Amino acid sequence: MLDVNYIIPAPFSPLLDPNIQKVVEESGRTAGKSTTNETVAISKMMAHRDNNIWYCRAEKGDVRPSIFNSFLATANDMGLDRHFKFKLNPMEITCTLSGAKCYFSGINGKTVDDLNATKGFVPQNRKLAMFIMDEANEAKSLQHIRAAETTANKFLMPGSKIIYAYNPPPNLAHWAHSYFGREIENGATRIYSTYRDIWGLLNQATKDLILEMKRDNPRQYQYWYLGQKISLQGLVLYTFKRERNVVELNTMKRKAANGYQPLFIIYGVDSGVVNDATAVSAWGVFPDGNLIKLYTFYLDPKVIGEPIPNTTQVTEIHTWYQRFYNEMASYGIVLPGPYNECWVFDSAVVTQDLMLEFGNRTGFNCKAVENKSIERDIKRLQNGYFRGVFQILDIPANAPSFREIGTFVYDEKNEIPDGQSDHTIDADKYATAHYYYAYLNNFA
Image 1 (cartoon, rainbow, N blue to C red):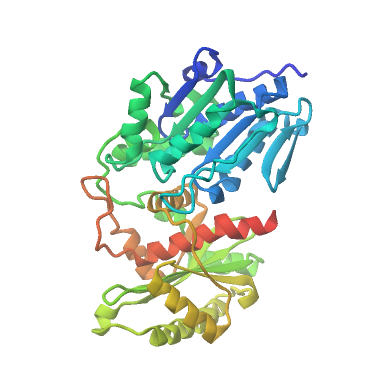
Image 2 (cartoon, rainbow, N blue to C red):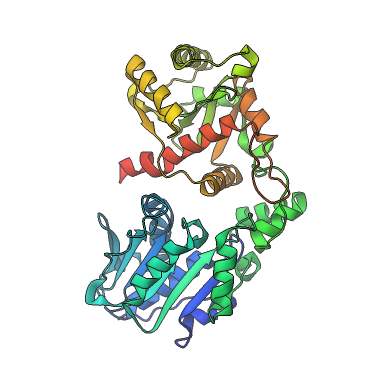
């Protein structure tokens, strides 16, 4: 076996203590949790065939774009990627030197009451060195955590680890606060870390973003990077910054003239009910991996003064679609056509009716969004704007999107109150969910 050298930040030393079995990693973002857990897992896999790893997220659809890719990146950073092979069905990574495997799973069932997603899991040789639950707070309930742990316990060896890593949710009533608090009270070892513990390992762009938030939004900084349970009343999409996330029209025209054109268009559709607006967000997928919102549809029945039937909405959306193509062409932006488009609708019944009628009328590729999660979907938008991956073209058609981003807020309980105007934001959730969990998987 190779002699593996690796760095473990000081707060994570309990991961190396064979007398500690259960660990709760409760801290802010960019605190080294995932990378350190993966580093320890890789070193164990290199050491012995029985050191299998079970690496989990809440939703199966989150596994590949997050922990699976992250594990491979960590192996690459350690200079050991040549000693690992992977496959996607079933999703697992094998150490070619020892034969140890890392299995990847989602622990949530199809419904809140379905606790059987992990029931049939059995590792090779019936042995596990680590059970890692990443973003543990995203599980549907504490019962799903218990069900997965019950399965893992059957295969843990002496010195093995159960690891729960999570960022404290902004909603102080979230089950994770009380559940993992009790786990710590009952003997689990708490690991708390921040970006400061891995400062020397961060790139300059990440450091700049952290310092920018510390300066411009200190309360959000306390929550986001220090993992503190504080009130976050304020903008939900606070990470949206005009200088980072807005593309000026002249800039877009110049880039389009140089060949910067969308490869695919994803339309997120949120349908209104009586008093709610119907919104469509048209996101272009570009060659550099960025998503740019090119155009917004917004139809508000309160402005018209009466509910708008689906038949009328279908007509209005299709007319908007044709206008979208014409306006983009005037800017030099060549849209890829219906065969390279997908319309992603809310899974609510009323929106499904609209989807069926729209699909029958147009013949376009339509589907319902899957695995909705308010917290995860909001986090995806926050992260996308924070990283500069999500951008919006600065044209009048996108005015409804800019307005809702600037007025969508948390209340004093860190919750998102009902009744806010967030229809374009919901449409953005559906479109970006399709990009991460369906579109990218087509290139597996």
